[in-house]
Length: 490
Image (cartoon, rainbow, N blue to C red):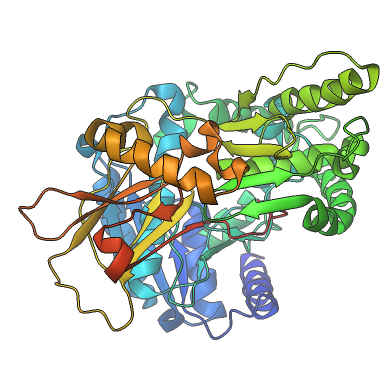
């Protein structure tokens, strides 16, 4: 029986790889050492061949035995003929988060390391072992967080890899989840039949983590066909939500093409306001479409690896609806912005529509980057890709380096220069681009000509600073990590 399941899984993965046009690509396998990811490695090695795979194990370093387990994974990858890397997270380099945020921060750092491996080997797709139980768990987790249709449609087969730099072809690597149609029991049976050793992570049973509590609820309900919390019941509702989302999304992309302005170089989206100022704009006239439009814009701006919660979207919706009601009634309107889900929404004025930008960061939330060489690309604040390189035909010393600062950090070094540069920019930039809320979340770039020299201001508020090395010899590009596509899958 297990042999049939394994054969079916291999054919299933082969079909997905071909459908996604990844047959000629080298694939990165995210292998933690659990049964699902070890089964994935076994299946993938037979579906595409071991030489077309690289495996990575990210050792979070939370448990004493994790290094031993990562090494054991390496031995099994060697047995399969798959190249393997271990990346160990170093928590002494960063402030360890409180237990409530430990899973979130660990996930971000894990994805960052996986993205680094993609960069090293120029891999464009990462396969993960997510299965149907994980899909049900994600649905329930998002349900209790009051996600809307965007979140309740669950994990998609393919999505962009969070916190990853683009490859040489300028495309961001993707996550592919080929085992979503398989349950955990099947993956266990494949491991047992193949003599594959796996490890159970004790932290997956730690009740301090909400996901583990939900996992236990689903596990206990799975033996009761009448329970609304068993995997089958949860996946039926998820599938219905996915259908609703797909219907709405068919028209949403063209609607946003007409009514949204994406400033990929600033990480800002502007949604049109009606010219008469009294009627809801077309993108906001239907509540279901409005929710999806806001979810798409908020998700694009904050670049989180999960959809925004419904409660946060409702805060934005409340201001939008009340704004037009007040306009229609001739009442005074407060121009107070709303900040939630890591995003600030600014009400429209005669100069701009509804503006969405990153919420102003807390003190020291965004760290100053290390010195970067010319030609390097940095992912700044998890949302903007920044590259500094020599202009064509310019000969620049190899010793030249650059750094990226938040506005608050830069103000401590170049307050007078920044204020003067902002004054100059106001003459040429759109008013929307020069709003204080937008400027506060823009990167400030400095250049250091030689190692011992003081860094000089080179780029701020979306433009190169006059009389700097950047003005004559350097090309500086800033663009959103999510490109310009607002209607993206999670």
